[in-house]
Image 1 (cartoon, one colour):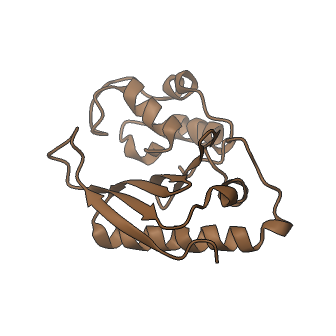
Image 2 (cartoon, one colour; image 1 turned 180 degrees about the vertical axis):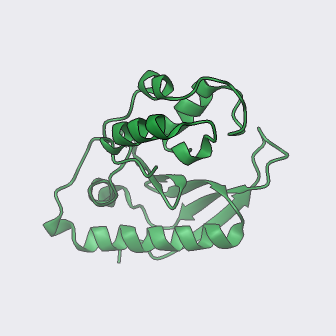
Image 3 (cartoon, rainbow, N blue to C red; image 1 turned 60 degrees about the horizontal axis):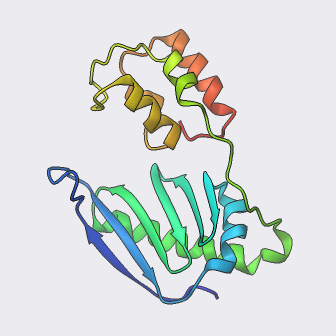
Length: 174
């Protein structure tokens, strides 16, 4: 087992003090840097960084970054959700490490959708019903994997289908 222990740090965003959710850092007692290319292959990382090693991906509707000695998870409901996701990640890291002989390591991130291409398919009303200030910001959040197309109540059925088809090319959890 590569990762045995960690400690969790739960905190509220300093940028958005009124936000209801929390964020989490899991400080790892063991360095998992060598497992990151395998984890990237298994979970399909959005971005992969080599120096220092880190992988960012979206899982359980959250953006998650795994560094050698730290895991960062955003926009959690509470400490219980953080604990579940970090425990799941611990298992994924250990399983990827144990099966590394059968996994092709991946040192690159997945291709990303274009913000302008997403914006072209949005209604461009800047209605703020999605709780973003503009459709451009909303398109950026979709490209990051932080928001989904269902968060846009103004999206018509045809545009929804077109945007879904576009995003499916990037294996985004929409």
